[in-house]
Image 1 (cartoon, one colour):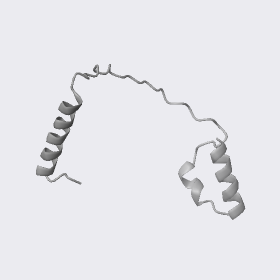
Image 2 (cartoon, helix red, strand yellow):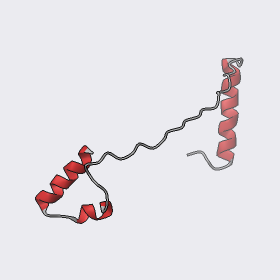
Image 3 (cartoon, rainbow, N blue to C red):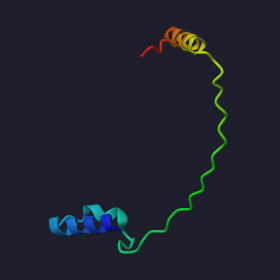
Image 4 (tube, helix red, strand yellow):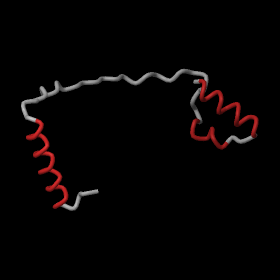
Amino acid sequence: LLERQINRDIDARLGDDSGTDDLAGIDPDKESAKPEAKWTFAQAEPVKDDKSKEEALAELMTMLVEYREQGLDE
């Protein structure tokens, strides 16, 4: 609402009505209806942290080699 009022004031001072063409038929002083927000989140898988540091590093290095072979090194 405040942004629309500011834009209207700027347009009035500059004498530029080009910014209001796309808002024809909309009352700038009326608050727009809030859209219904429905958020659903799936439950995350539990983190499996049973690898040793060396195993995790070996897995990452294997993945890096695979990516490089596919040409995705950058």
